[in-house]
Length: 111
Image (cartoon, rainbow, N blue to C red; front, top):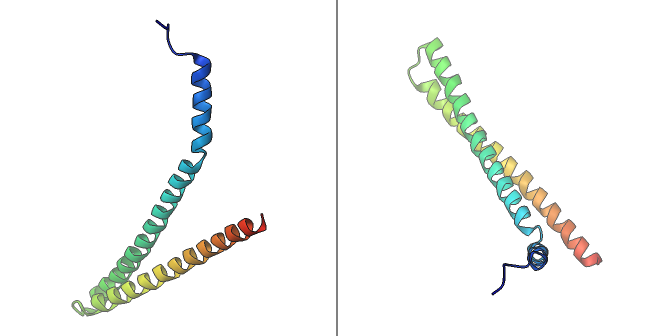
């Protein structure tokens, strides 16, 4: 019977596995986290718009004594502002992705 696995063969096998896998797994995970960060950024922008609008409306209602009128108006304005900022962020991300894909296409055509 054999005494155990050959350490040299195991090291060669590990090297071949690493070479076959490459760094594709690390890039995929970084891209996933990047997309999650962008999503949280957009959610935060929307919630911030709603919160600021609600706060301004509530404050004006307290000062002027107009029940929920100002709160409703400024909450809706905050929602509109949040959506507008989200759309702007999405456009920036789309432009960035288009630039990256065109750079990758130029590199592949150049080779």
